[in-house]
Length: 512
Image (cartoon, rainbow, N blue to C red; front, side):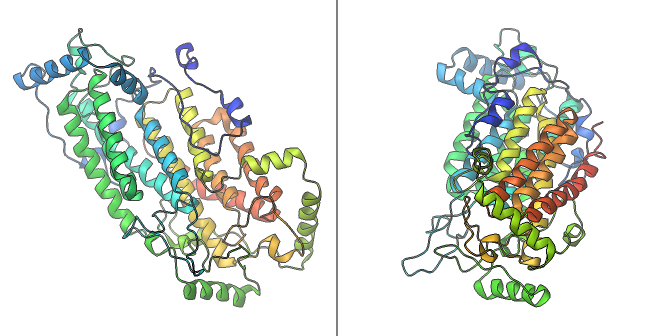
């Protein structure tokens, strides 16, 4: 990593991992940097939502000698010459890799909305609904399954949009304003990437559209972020208005395609009423002779998104292909061995075990386990100097894998409906709350193992580190008393297996 980049990374990852602030959204402080590659052929990559980068039509831009273009250039030049100190700070803030910034905005919103809807005065519960986002309760409840879906649609849309932008950038090959007029002050590191269409505008529009749908109460805030980002693109010297207009058109079209998929993926049916929830539990009892009972106080009548396991997956054809084996029968030798392990942990809560349990808690008001792995990814994306296209690629495969892993995990949770330790071990207490969904397998374990495998694929020199963190995330739930050890170990294997589907797809997308 170059010295100028090292200077701007506030915390090395080793220091970051040792901190206790990891549960909350953080903003990585870095300035623009020279990309490790510019990927002239990036527009030929295989996208996710569309068939190829040329599928979306982008009109030929005006020639740089035309009166129309020269007028745009003069306008931008004047704006840059008169920009305020605040505008300068804003331009630096967005950097030349805004994919990271929009991902951080998503994590911020996930944390803000990761709040359990409380009971009504009469003890009943009202579910959040997009038809009445003001509520009460306000929509959404950004729990881990919801967070996985937000991040997957955001990242996939950014990736596809940037493939389209890259295709036309190197097809039309229109230089950036600062390259045409040497008197234009350039805010970022110079590198030979054409300006039309604006990749930043693609990211701004697609991100605003996806996040506004997922967080409708934040429409004004997200519109303001888009406006600030677009202004930064002009004031950086990298784009003229027609660059932005073409990028915005791409972003809008890709977002529309993504949101059409989202409207049909089954998520709207994932939260069910009590009758359906009870029938799922009874089916598991008929199948195995056990069922999970919610021991919250006050207890919500329905578990968390019981049908998330039926939501459409990205890279797995059938969720049953990734379903783990039957967990140990209560009373069996394997089960009794686990009871003793958990009792031992509960009786010997060492400072280190408590630290690990608290560190990976990812409870209410945090960016969930998904946020951990996106935050890790962002830091290494900057360290390895990835361009926006490659950044979006890493995040797309990471978040597709983790959403698929979550779907697989929730399929297992409600198919097996396995009780948590607090339900079966008399007098047992937890130090990590009482989640309102079945135990097997552990969501932390599945999400983290999937995230670690994808990051190990993209950053192979750090594979051991990522897998070590995933193992720590998994055992943290056992230390916290809310999971059996087989929830964690089998869940880790499950996450690895699910991630392989996304990794196999990444290997054939054409970038290498």
